[in-house]
Length: 211
Length: 211
DNA sequence: TAGAAATTAGCGGTAAACCACTATTTAATT
DNA sequence: AATTAAATAGTGGTTTACCGCTAATTTCTA
Image (cartoon, rainbow over all chains, first blue to last red; front, top):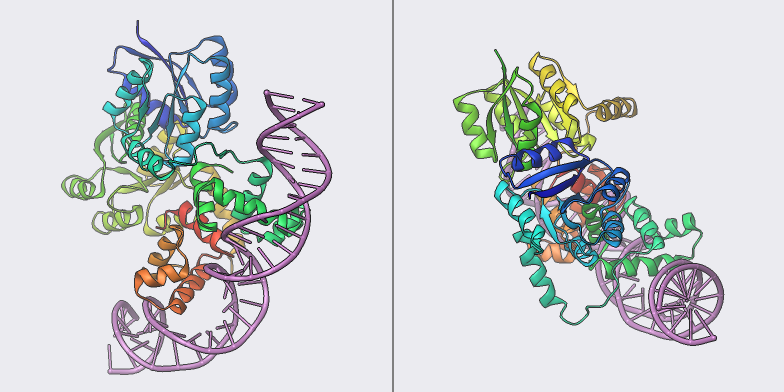
């Protein structure tokens, strides 16, 4: 019985590319291709694949949202994240949600096939570059493990305005808040995203599609 | 005689995806696939395709570098840029260099084929979203056309270190410069990139792949 | 080879960001 | 009903970024 694989990616080039790569692999069958979160959720409800290749950036819903929703109702579906960003924050987020692997889009044919096979068998798969980063991160953060890194609604709003080049005072005015409050949110963002300054905030936010 | 198409992209998924999309188009023949700038230049030297699908981010050389080099020696090769960034700055840059089109990676099958056919026949092709943006830009910038926005070597170095979350003092130490000098470069960057603060610098730099 | 950029460095000053706290009220969750 | 997290606001302070100016070299280029 072949592996039933579903692909969720809004770029035809990517979906076609994966199909093409898997064309020679007789034991993998691409059963569905979804180009947005809505139809993906509907499709999963009707028939669950063994493995779901999930893009981080579908037009209507974010990767984390979709993964959480799918794994809650259909925990037997093995999600292999497909992303072009190697920002550790996002990798950890998806793995914590219960995804079985994280595959970079730059991966080659053999790697992709291998990753699919691995997660289908119940194993985890991480692109090599991420593996190394994760290990280094663990050594850095031996102690503080239970910190909550999910951004709150307010923090996301502030972050978006920071990216739009507004000062704290301008943000305070826009959101009808005290300057102090905005400063607090900003510092929370620095801590949660583990960066040193504004440059880091913008970098991580853009690379992860957080906003 | 079919259109001879070469693809330059380091992601197997993308290259496979395009091949797959063109499989049904009998009048387009993918003659070569290159995964880095070096082999691309060599390949072009040996046999020129009618159309070159050129990714903006090859590992060893940048899109603009490659386009300039190829068009200088083989102006009859029609370059169709393949990019995931819709930042106007980059679009204009590639078109000014002589590229015949700019295609977003999110494009669908029909669009891709159409773009290839169009440039092969000597026409220009721009993804619809870019077309609109370009027109708006022209109305905005009727007047100031001759401003020099190209970043200098030093400015790029400083910008990279800003993105790496270093302070001006740290940058000064790393580059063996005075703090004042770094501040000057930083302000030049703000002016040239037309942004208000660090957030803007990082945003533009990441979105355009300047560094 | 003259002129234009680029690179370097400085002065004086203001505005903004960053940091470590405390603390109250509201919302969510158990 | 009790606990936890989020959102709010504050004090007091240090560091960094931002801004406009001048100006001497060096390097590039027309």
